[in-house]
Every structure is written in structure tokens, then in C-alpha cells.
Length: 419
Image 1 (cartoon, rainbow, N blue to C red):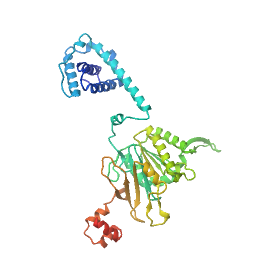
Image 2 (cartoon, helix red, strand yellow):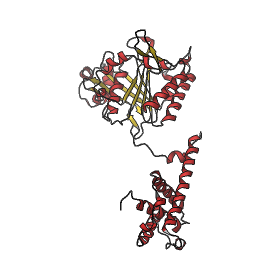
Image 3 (cartoon, rainbow, N blue to C red):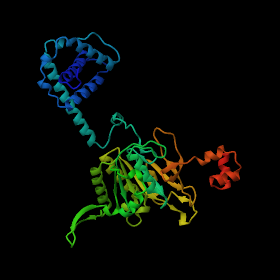
Image 4 (cartoon, helix red, strand yellow):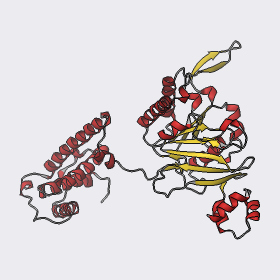
């Protein structure tokens, strides 16, 4: 039999109807109804002209096949066989009448499903049953530890620590479906909102080979953050002036238009503060910061619940003095931290070192906790370095030699060596 033939489609609907008539009092009857609606709606999606199907195409000897198939369906739905099929109710009906009757039932089911779908979309609350019934995404991360599917993450580091460079390497690999930092990524288009100008961005992009010819990354530099307005210069040339959103609500509306236009799976805002339109001391007000992030999440996830939001944030050294530890609980990161599903911190191993430490905070579904990773930028991109603490624990070297090899103080080497 050909899977897409009218004959087979008509038989599927008829068999499902037979199954319902044979076992009307099955204790798992609702499971049959679900299957019936599913198959019938799938057929209706293709607008198959079942009403034009001639009953004469169904051969008489197929009646037995239908009965057997109906019984098999019911057994699979009910888990066990019931009494002998009772088909007397169908004896006075022609095949065409049964098909037409089933088609009408299918249409009613389809209308009911559509009405329920509209009702659920318009409700503020969703039952746990409806939530758990939705199909799960096969992947949880676009970039593990950085961009979570349907989640909001923050990426934090002091200025000039290499946040943008690392992210460009990450999305270059992710949009091509390549591994990043030894972990698999999941491809999807990226919308990158930047506070930097196009000229500065070009300098950074030139060294990222994975972004050459890459049509899956759209970058919005700061001079293009707004709606274009056509202008005519004195010499007659046509140019465009981009009107920057005047407040936070207008900024959200503009970003919404970009998401609807480009359909990204990853939204990156680098950095978050310049676009927030904070007034006075609002940046230090946890309530205002939390409200801004909440409004951003609501806008994005209403468009696409699988988008990953990644907010970039500058952290500062205490009092701005060289050598001081980094204060990750500064006035913005503090309130941001509680709003995020996941937080990533990029820290230096030590001053003037090309090595960095990625410190993770939050749950990683399907994976064990991964507190931190040491990385280094090479000509071919970022590479993961061995865990220095693990190296120290396994080393037989004296503490002095170990400290020199690892590039840390003797006290640190001794502490790591003890585990």
C-alpha cells in the first residue's frame, strides 16, 4: 500500500472508527479518542478529498483486514484484548457512509482542538498537565554553560577581559554546530545587540574565522540601534539616520521588531546597562533592575519560548585598584544574579596572564555540576586547559617547583597539593 493514497487514508479513519465502536466501554477509552483525533487531524492537514473517495475502491475481502486491524489497535491501546468484536451496528451502513461519518467526527475533533489551543493561549495560567504534555526539547543548551534554551543567563567579567571575543568564538562554533570548549553546541541563528560601533566590531570580528561567510549571526552595532529614517544629503545622496529609542518601553518594542524579523534562537545584549535607560540612581535599585529584566523576558518568550537570552555585564575591581579581587556582587550584578537561570563569570587566573577561568553558577540539566574551567586563547580559538588543582593533587614535585610550573604562589600550590 502507498502511504499517501486516498484509499489508505480512508481506511485509517474507518479503522479508528471501528475501534471505537468495538470497545465503547474500554477503561482506557480516552486513549483511543486521543489517537483518533491525532490521526484524523493529521489527515485533514493535507486536505485530502475523502468525500470524493468512491466506496467501490474498498474491496470486500478487506473487511476482515479492517476487523483484525481494529482489534490490534484496541489491544495496543487497552493493553489487553476484550470480548469478540460486535459489528452488527455497522452492517446496515455502506463503506462510504462510515467514511463520511468519521470525517465529520474528525472535523469536530479538529475544531475542538483548535478551540482548546486558543483558550490555552489566552489564559494567564497553564495547568501542570498542559505543561507536562508539551513535547520536550531535545537539547537544553545552544552553548553549554552560556546560552540556555528558553532561559536567561548573564555573562560577567571586568572590562577588557575578553568577553566579546570569547562570545564571538562561541557563537561562531554554535551557528555551525561545532563543539566549543570540548562540549557540543546546538545550531540556531544569533541576534547580537552591541554597544560598540561597527568599526570597532570589525576589528574584533576579523580574527574569528568561523564568522567569515556566516549568515546566521546578525549584529546590531550601536549606531544602528533604532528605526531607520531616509534622508537626502545636500549632494543628493541617499542616507539613513537611525532614531534611537527614547525610553525603555520603546527599546523593548524595537528589539521585538528585530526578533520577529530575524527569528533568532540566541539573543545577546552586550552590554545590558547602556540600553536600560536608567535614570538617576535606578541602576542601584534592585527593584528597577529586576523589573527591566522581567519585562525583557516576557517580551522575548511571548515571541518564542525557546530563545536563549544572554545579558553581558561589566563587573569592577574593588576601588579600581590593580591586584584587588573582583567584586561580583557589585550594584548591578547583585540584583541580576537572582533574576537569572544561569550565571557565568569570566575571571583572570592572575594579572597579565592570557589564561581565564570560566566560573559557572546554576543548574545544568542533564549534566553534573561544573564549577569552573580554565581556558586560554590560541591562534585557533579558545582551548580548555588541564585543571591546575587536579594537576597539583596528582603531582609528586616539591611545592617550590610545582608553584613555578603552575605559575602560582607556594602557599596556593601547597593548598592545592593537599586537596
